[in-house]
Image 1: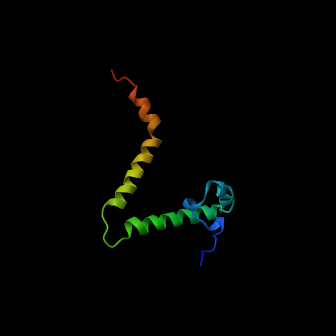
Image 2: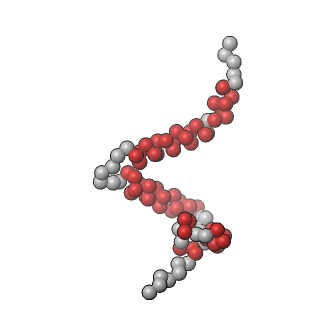
Image 3: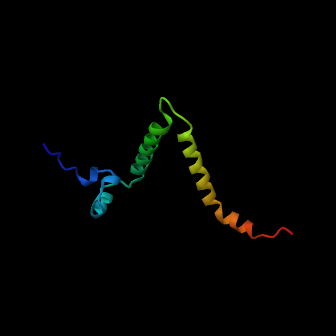
Length: 89
């Protein structure tokens, strides 16, 4: 018995073909409440996959820390670049 086709709106982003991307984006909820729900779902998935495990290591926390360092470096890059060319003598 063949599987029933899944509507484009219910597919995950990785399962959407390029031609279906417009209709998939049209079915998303871009209200403030919908965006908060999407962020909450992403946080829950990350937490359950990397943090809330029986035999966990440092991997999930290290990934979060590396992401924080990378984002803070990108935010401060203009200031760092400006200081690099400054002469102190």
